[in-house]
Image: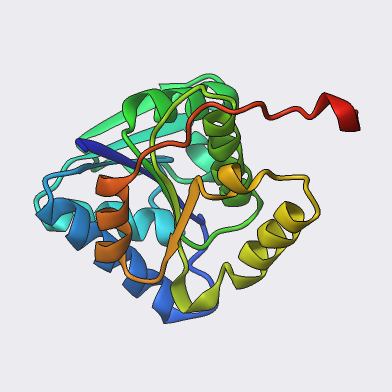
Length: 193
């Protein structure tokens, strides 16, 4: 793994644990000589993880849409900052540059990004590991909901296994290193359509 995409909030959240987790993840990826790919902002958890990777001597590639350049306060001290036209272009480039994907705590954008990249895996568009860093049990209810969706047969159990979950960055990255994407299986059940 050479580059890791981290999705996370442009807010710092309500607990200092979220910032501490971003910094711990940063130290872990730099210790493994992995570059960070992220959304390019200097604020919130996004800014914290970028700053921490840079402080540890790592490389950071930020990708930010032109319209968000001012709104998200683009980080001007990165190894590389790429400006793109749209959110769609941002997500595609982040996916192309990355060997794996982790979501730290965040809001709608973070949820959408991690769920979309899991969907791309389900569709066979990539075979890269996807994970949640479940800081302070932030994602417990989402995990419960995904398990519920699998028990209700809206998500196949094999596809539910695409999303790895851990509270510790080191353990999550160990799981990433051992990850084998599920064999391509029929994801549409024509009998139930």
